[in-house]
Length: 282
Length: 308
Image (cartoon, rainbow over all chains, first blue to last red):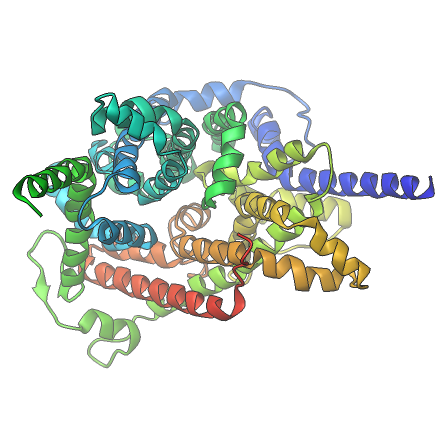
């Protein structure tokens, strides 16, 4: 009985501690959400979380954007870019992964090693030549430099993730499909793809998140406000500093985080699986 | 091998390579060729408008040595120093924190899935411009943190972001704050350690500390090592946070001038693309050497249990 009470107290203390730490950690995010509903001139003078005067004015002003381009355009652009990258990564990374995991060919180990090395490569060594190349193609200030590379399975990380997953699938299914007269491509689309669903969802999640937040490349290639993405739009607010723009900036920040939240909470199971099994970078 | 078998082998190779075509094209056109080209550019002066001009090792010379005619680029060395400081403080702190929280959670708590979610949120959001901009406001002189410190504790805190002594530490804090991924990985790793190990050692009279150093750490060492390498490679390339927090300038006084931020400024603001290419190669070599070093060290420190 005594031991039981001690365990109970122990568990209460642990839980309380974890919750307290979690609250401290999330305080900035909660503050951001609260601030987005405060009146612009009270954001910094009102340190409390609950707004004294609740207003939607920041959202209205923020959505209008800066100059002639509204935030709706930035969101549309971000969704187009992220959507295309997701589709390309799912198709081409899995195609490549299938070849590495299941097909036999001369030089397989060599190419696999090459692929692994490209995963470790800092992106900077290719940044400048790629920029020069895309500039020659006339692709500056278009979405192409951000999207086209994904159609060539340049995200080695996801290839690796999918290879690991496909290798763990039973081979017997392939073989029986082969006997049934299914070709290599048929096996890929009919058998391997459906079974790889969990890893493909992980690919979808992280491609979306990383493209959504990929500020560096967007900064490099997008010049005109009508092509700007959400992070670029937020930067516009930041540049036009002055107290009055913080409110709209925070409101749009909250909106910009919303897709990540929704994705996270609807596909939570796959998040944890994906991270735990592959050690995804943060 | 008879003719028919050989033909069949060739055909099989061809179909396999057909699957690899997109990746192979991408590798040659978007990775290998750019690498070779940037290696070439690193020995030139190049502003994208005029053709590259061969200057031998001068870019590298200016980075590390310098003389009267071509003075050493002190900003480069400073950015290297800032980045090293950032990587070697933030990565270990992040991993220690992640391991600590993972161990705290590694028991039979009903709310584990909820806690895991809670603690992953910073990682989910932390890479965004939105959070970096928020950070700038939180740690500004008249920011949220200081308002709390002043009103609740009567302190007179400095302006963290605009003080060169502290600015980098706000970025380190932002990085450590995002400890969710290694935490989830460690938590999964901790669950793999057989309970019998702890029970047996407890019978032998081992305390909690002893258990941690003799069981937990060795069993987790492959995971810790993997996380260390990946986090390090990523931290060296950090860009967004420093760019947003410092308004794209790496300030105050270059105290948040991350390597990739300086590379961006050199290559794209000053159009010194030859120099920026040389910087990219120096970064590649630094990462390669550190990764190799980590692998070498891991040979003696990491134990890959036979039970796996």
